[in-house]
Each structure stands twice: as C-alpha cells, then as structure tokens.
Amino acid sequence: MPELPEVETIKNALSKAVDKANITKVSIFNNHFRKIIPDDFARRIEGAQVMAIRRKAKYLLLELSNGLTVIWHLGMSGKVKISDFPPENLEKHDHVLIETDKGTIVFNDARRFGMLTYEETDKLDNCSLFSHIGADPFDERLDGLYLYNKLQNKKIPIKAALLDQEIVNGIGNIYASEALFDAGIRPTRPAGELSRKDCGKLLESVRRILRRAIEAGGSSIHDYRKPDGSLGYFQNMHCVYNKTGQKCPGCTCNVAQTGGIKKIVLAGRSTFYCPVKQK
Image (cartoon, one colour):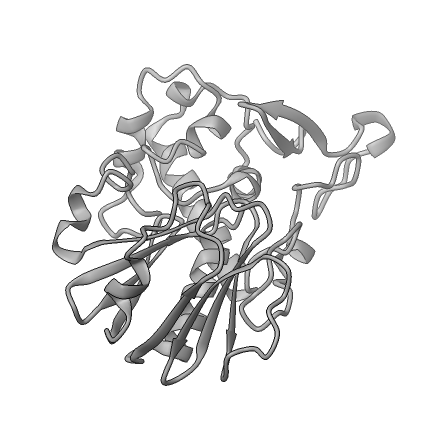
C-alpha cells in the first residue's frame, strides 16, 4: 500500500501537472472499488477547476471551484498516471480517466481496493473517513508530549501503535520499522512504557525518515510507481526493512553470532529490527 511518502510524492506531481486546471471530461470504465464510485461523480466534477491539491493522511484531496473536494485513496495497488494528452489505448486496470485542459490523469488499480469519491469541502472535517484520524506526522502541534499522552496505558507493541492511524496518521509498515531503528527502539516494547524523552526521540526519527523517503520519491516494493512511471528509490536506503539476516548500517556485530537483522510478525505485519542496536 502506498504510505505517506508515496502519497506525498503523487500529490506533488499532481500539483505540478493539473493545479488550477479545468476538468473537461471524466470517464469511468469500472466503478467497483472498495467503495463504489458515486454514479454522479463525473457529472459533479466536470467543468470545475482544481483549486488546490492536498494530502490528508494517506488520502489525496483535490479541492474544486464548485465547493466539492475529490477524495482519493490508492488502496493496495492503486497508481496515478499523468500525461499531457489522453492515452490512445487504455492499459489493463485503467479504470478512471480525468481529462483537464492542462493534462490527463489515469487511475489504475489492479486489486480495486482504492477509493474515489467526493464530499462538500466545508464538511470534510466531519467526513467519516477523517473523523477518527490522529495528528499528521508533520503537524507542528504534534510533539513528544502528545505522543506520550496517546501511548499511556497502551500494552500493545510500539510498532503496532505507530500503525494505529488514530494515534498518528500516515505511518505505514515500512516507515514504522525504519523509524524505530533510527530511534534505537525495539518494535516489541510495550507502547505505554516509552518515556516522554523516548517519544520525542521517536517522533524526530519518524519525521526524519519520512522526509528522506519523500525526497527519494517513496519506496517501490511491489506495485508503487511515481506518476511518470518511474520508481521511487528509498528502498535502496532501507536500513532494516526486508533485510533479514543482514548487517544494519554501521554494524560491528558478529552476524554469525547475532543472526543479523531479525524478522518477526507484529499485528499481522512483517517487522524488521536489529536486536543489538534497538532496546
């Protein structure tokens, strides 16, 4: 699933391509996603101008001049493709085509776990999709005390807590593992046992890892591609994710004795960590 850095990368590409563009035509070839695309979706957004493009958690938001906002989630395998002109031939799993006077956007989703809908812009804060999400990792109001208070009395592993979108939104499996390594915190530690200092350090690591990933265009592990079709390259910078048995960066351990980076499953997700550096 595209995580925050991948969604941010796509948002930036859309901003460059279609910000202030007028939507001229919307073609829906398959509306059966995780949530069915509304029957009036095309009619409601055609003719509107794209006024702003934002990210909220792992959602893309396209604010329109007619008072509506397009809400877009990429699910497990969704891709956004951008081109100057409508494609002559659709590719497999191209389900939605949005044409503008500045370029064309294609929504391709092999598994169809994504979502494309709309909401009145002034009602977004009360939208059920966003009513329970926690603070954005880059929200200036998010600090170590906020995270410490959120984790109090939680017995679940800190890795699972980082994936809880009601605590902090947008952090996915890859970046949770990488941030915990960067902070030197073992993913199995009970979340409620982290001190306020630990929480501040972890938050710094979360932001540092996410910024690096955004600069790298995200991680292309499975289906993710940038809107121009190229790969993100942060997967080449992973320290522990998917590195089972290997040395972590700067490792001075005897891997024959330690076994290198460990892989375990927490909350149903593969988790990677260094048993020496992470306490």
